[in-house]
Image (cartoon, rainbow, N blue to C red; front, top):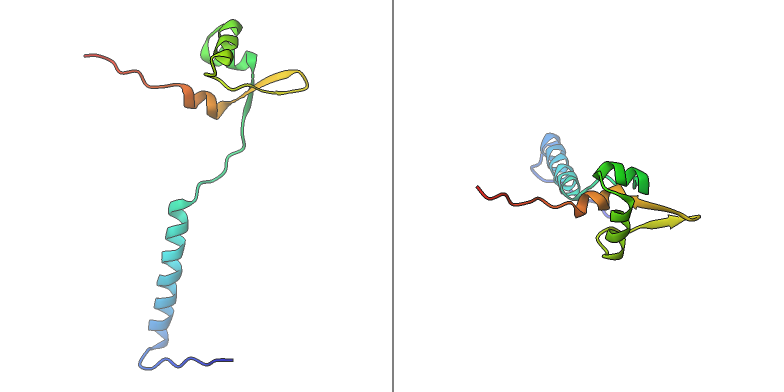
Length: 94
């Protein structure tokens, strides 16, 4: 086992140096950390009501690849995050 000698370093200075190093590492992790949220899936009827459109409009958006449908057991679902991502801000002329 190797030994390390600290010359002219007080225990308080060593403790502060360690705490600063740990704090820097934690700040770096916090900057890049994004909490993973579970996907929320909506049915066609929920999307229809959310966007106030008809089911035929959803069908057309699926064909034109505007929305990406997901299915299981003959049912169709959409990810809420993807629906919110395709909605764009309109530029209004003044």
